[in-house]
Length: 162
Image (cartoon, rainbow, N blue to C red; front, side, top):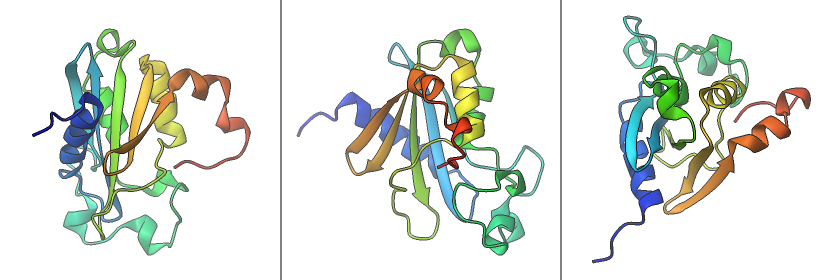
């Protein structure tokens, strides 16, 4: 038996975290790791105490036929990256890595070419996280330097989120 490489090990954990998600469209799981220690975890779900889409039986964005990457102000959920950041102290996140996996709630397939939405990118930048590793499928992943998000400011291009 071969030992799992560390990057996919952390992505596997993030994917397991996504199973707690309550979104009817896509569930994401995120973990923040620094010095080989998991600092925090987060998944997609409504704010504490509010009913989530699973409980309500509908998604407002889906009902309105809003495409992926648009109109997140209408979403009931707090994104996995945001939940992960909320649960950690900034001093622990500086220089860390955030691992992110998205799963389509209907098909169970990995969301390919996923990236953080504009709001989550801003939080990741301010949290001091150094890189984001995103699973594209199976053992295939991309590593994004957060510094690139600062230098190539997509908020100026009009390009929409993930």
